[in-house]
Every structure is written in structure tokens, then in C-alpha cells.
Length: 386
Image 1 (cartoon, rainbow, N blue to C red):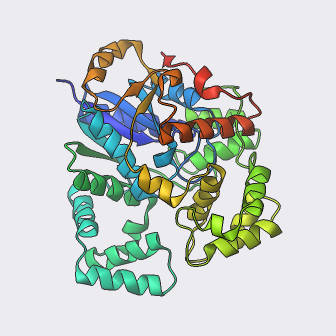
Image 2 (image 1 turned 30 degrees about the vertical axis):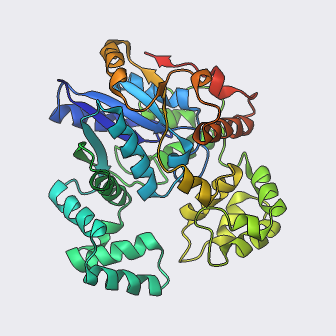
């Protein structure tokens, strides 16, 4: 049986660094098939993806992916822990994926597994260090990294973004008792780099910035292919709709949003009334305790009508959508029948009574609005075949 390697990803947009991960996977597993489980219209950081899902799926297929599926919005727009849990559960329930590959600044698996085990079964020393860091006003992610550093050494290592997500994947595998075999690959370069000339492996942030700044030549060079001229959704495209949603909601309604507690709803309501853009709102909201990305996700939860109760009641995936596949990997279609999750090739075949399906529809409609496209994109979007 050929190994089937799953990757949980965003590809916003797909670039040379992502293609390099494919190369590293096939260096270790030469005959592997690669399955990408990719966020749809909105990303983990809480902003709309620049390009629609089909366009990003095509790029991954052209670079060597064999199959691209869509990670539902309920798991795509989440903190790292639940982003990983949703993705790992889907790949596990497909029943034909054998490995999970992920990037990490430090790709030493035993070290990462030791840290993941500590997070799943924290010691008293870890708990004390965590509470001390939180008492200093640090964000949870920063406090967790500090506590890991206290117990395992090298605090800086545990604050690196890809290492943080790697630990979430390993914790999800443990928590779900998943048979997926972890396959870390070293993530080169600066994840948060804002310019394209600092290393051979660009950051998605820098590529997006070049694209949004009207410098497609630089973006194309960083991606290794010519980015399509398809409609894009700019990060600020839905700002006015967001501010209207927040201003028109009561503080009690805002308190129903995920991770909106300790009076944050009142601060959110007040700042929305004083801001004229999403970035201005986030700059007013941000504190040492509330990280920018957490607040950004909170805004997108408001746009998509996602409440804390909704996420509790819909904590497990109910289906997965097919975005694209390679003709050369047509053998994969014979594996679909092994999946314990419905695998949809057409949105028209979805269960419109399923709350997760309804949420994905809302996400596509919002993205289309931001990209100045007519409605119904989810139903018009065809499976990409390369």
C-alpha cells in the first residue's frame, strides 16, 4: 500500500515554501500520495483568503499535490488547538491517510512529542509556571511557551509559530487516538517576514503584501508560478459590514461569541463605535492579554454568526468537500469509499440542514461579497482536475 500523507494547510497563497514541503515528504517517502486539507474562504488568523478555494487548490495540484479537500469553516477559523483537532479528525476519518506532515522550526520529533505529552498531562511544575506567566498578563500562547521553557528549557523554541502548531497536531493525534504517523519537516525562513528578499522560502504574509500592493511580479517570483488574475478578497473588503454587525449587536449578544469573556464584549462594543476600519478596531482592542490574531478571529466569528454554543454543539466534522485532484492520481478515487465521512464533490449534494454546511455557505457568500462577485459561488465552484 502506498503511503498517503495528509497536510493541514491554508495556502494563502501557495508558494515555494509549500512546494518545498512536498519535496521533503517525497524525499522521505518517494512514492507517497499527498492529500491537502485546506482552509476554505477564511483563514485561522481571521481574515478572508486572498483567492477563492478552487484557485488555491489548483496551485497545490500543479505543484504536486494529489488531492485537495476543504477544511470546514468551523475548524478553519479557530485557535491552533481546535484548528489542529478538526483537521486531524477529518484526516483520520478518511481512513486512507497514513501520515500527517507539518512544518516546524525544530523538526526533532522526540523533542516535540515530549512537549506535546507534557501539555496533555501537565505536571505541577508546568501548571505553576503557566499560572505565573498568565498572572504577568501574557497571552495564553506566550504563557504556555514560557511554562514549556521552564520545564524543558529553551523558552524561545516553544514560542516559534510553527512549533506551536506542530505541538497542537501531536496533541490532537494523542487525544483522538489517531493512527496517523507524524512526519515533521523543517520550516525554513521567517514565518512573519514582511519582505520577500530575506530568504529563499518566502512567508505567505510577504507574498500577500506584494500582491495587495500591486506588485504581481514579485509575488509571482516568490510563489514560483504566475498567480491567477481571478478576483481577490482584500483584507479590508468586509470592514464596514463587520463594524455594522458589532455596532448593531448588544453587549449581551457579543458575549455569546467564542472567547469573548471577562468584559471583552463591552470593550468590543465600545471600540466598534469608535473605529472606522477593522485594523483600527483591532489596534484599540489589543492588549498584552488579548493577542491580535485572537481578536481578529473574534471579528470573523461575529461576521459568520458563530457563537460559543455553536462550536460546542458542532465540535466534530460531518463531511468534507473535494476541491481538486490530479488525473495521474485517479487511483485515489477508489479510496474514497473507505472514508467514514461523506466526501462531497458537489455542494448541491450537501445536507442543507447540517449547521456546518450552512456555515460554509455563509462563508462563501461573505467572501463573494468581499470579492464583488455574485452569490452562489460554493455551488458554481467546480472540482479542479489537473
